[in-house]
Image: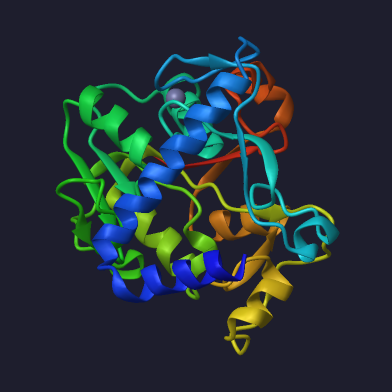
Length: 277
Ligand SMILES: [Zn+2]
């Protein structure tokens, strides 16, 4: 065991970053192949690659606060990663909500913030309008071609540039979240819609937020992830979206239950924000 740890430490220190990533990717594929052969079945189907399995791979973080505050969409859970294509529960849900609930059409000009790889690949094949992928740290998303750097609190797009904005699991990282929401509203056309998923809790009294909390350990203890700056209370998150000027359409669990066969998180509702006409 000590030998194995020593070898791992040696490899981590000596091999170039890219080589380590290739090794990790091969390991991931091996794990996925083993999982696939042990979980044959058709209980769940992937909306992206059409493969079916008895279950999808488990993933997520496992910190005590996630259970204690019942944080939705963050914790260790079953049926997250598709063993065949690597898509995650959140991007399968996003695709279903975009196409079946938000009326995404090929001609829609679409902004995809912090793009999920399989969802972006789908959009790049189907959107014939303008499709822009952006991130504050574009180098962190090597699988997305043509991605540009954008700060959500000061987007470099004209007013009314997009019909659809997809920005999932981003707001909880941004200190000035209402400014970012207002910017998203600005770049949407009147009647345009944004899908703005975040992790949230329904058991806390109010949104937990303290910008003086800056260490990884403190953030993990309070919000369940080292780079989150708050934990939203569900209704307060809706209130903030309204404060930014959106009409908010909540898709509650009941409205999404037919999607469970695509291995979406059965506890995750959807937040659709619409710019008034
Ligand atoms: Zn798949």
